[in-house]
Image (cartoon, rainbow, N blue to C red):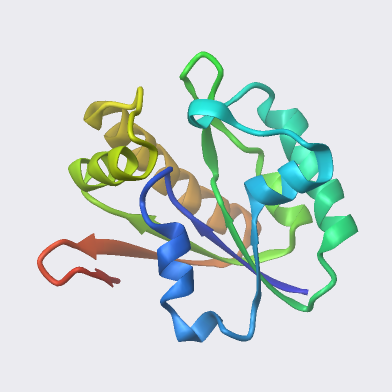
Length: 167
């Protein structure tokens, strides 16, 4: 199986990025949170996860159960907010088990992400400072995990003036 993880913090634009990129047309697309929900019935309120490690075990079972394609694109995260609103990192073994061969991280200005979340959800407990810190953490882990797993990565940044993604 060839798998790519499109990652970035909540509200960065992962779903839109996937939908608007023809290069991903040949891939089966799965949202990690939707796989967890479909397999276990768990839903995540306010972007906070009560049991990060337990949910990753559910994700791996869900992938075994639902994912049969050879080329897979996952929409997910490397870091998540736990129930205490702290940033928690997903263990790299999860991404190894998912056979991730390439990470694509999306970044955007924290103010843009904040506005997107407000527009989409109507409200948020996230602040611009928290968004900035979470995004820095996610990027650090993408680089670290790609080296540790000996896989490739790309980082795309949202260009507000062009309304498009740039490498």
